[in-house]
Length: 439
Image 1: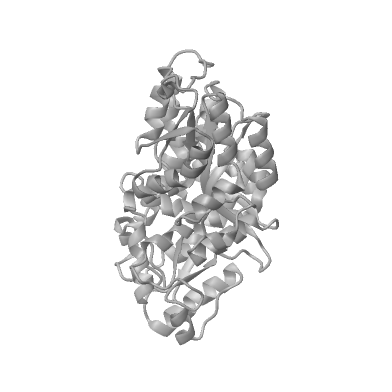
Image 2: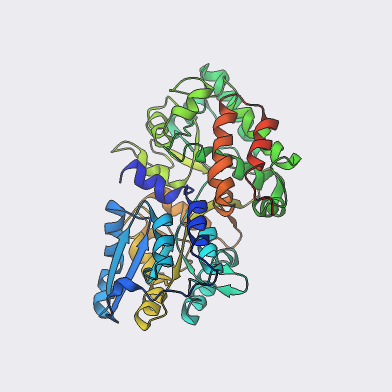
């Protein structure tokens, strides 16, 4: 799968605000939900629309092929990189798909708040409550109504490294943030080169990898209450807790002695594509990089990803060794139709049977606790599934995906770029905060 497709689905999407504007322009709120106009009147045909394209879209369709044939249901999938805008246009025109795979909870809430979406069937809600944590169920709930079950998921905050190099340097995986800072200094002193590499470049979405850094540090240094209030806009970016996270990240990313291994100076972070750091880690030129589980797809062919292999990863630690908070992303499935066939498809997509079918095809994970981790061929994805299924894990959705699009996919991304380019932290935080709606 190409870089643009992977970044499109698995990182914050740029157009949440655009979709909201399109919907707001359709007239009075509360426009009636569509009936899935693409079905052409065939009660056994269900249309699904999402951001998943190319090879990954083929795997998605393969995942439900046998089930659909057994149940005499035709599923027509369409993937688009202009999903957010087009979905709004189709909903306004009374021609929505039967089902949409939403890459952001906020986008699902936007459609639900305008009465475009149908509440999830009881069987889907039962599956969600049985096979997902309360946090995940909440992401598909708007007000007191449950609209959609999760589909796939990823865990962010992995620190990728070379086990062979760690052995050569006589260093170990850190268990706290302080130990991570000590590890960074130790590697720099032993090698005389920058330990870290980072890439923020991602086309029109440049800057998003930086938001992941900040989100991870806010969660780990200030806890879930501050994180949740920050995402909701009740804790501003200018708050000392958020500035503290920037300062902590800056000790690494703004330190010319610590970055940007294999690429250049601090500012080269903004011109380095996020996936391009993977080969540098595999070759040993870069000792450490921070990226989600999907980075495994960017290593050169033949790279052995294993605890004793060419590359491996550990989860960004917290202030203490026993912390189990993580950030991540995923999709929520919502429906514009309540036809019988649509409800059957929704129930299947929320089941462990579908999760095991899709994960066994490779490249993705799910937070469904009925999923067998062994079905994931990639060992990092197996570890990711274990984290997602662990009842002691506290999961928080990617903060920028939950914020209004003008912030999460706007001023926050731009602010990270400006920050790396040398703007002061105070100025950057003030600038990011301007993206929040005034009311």
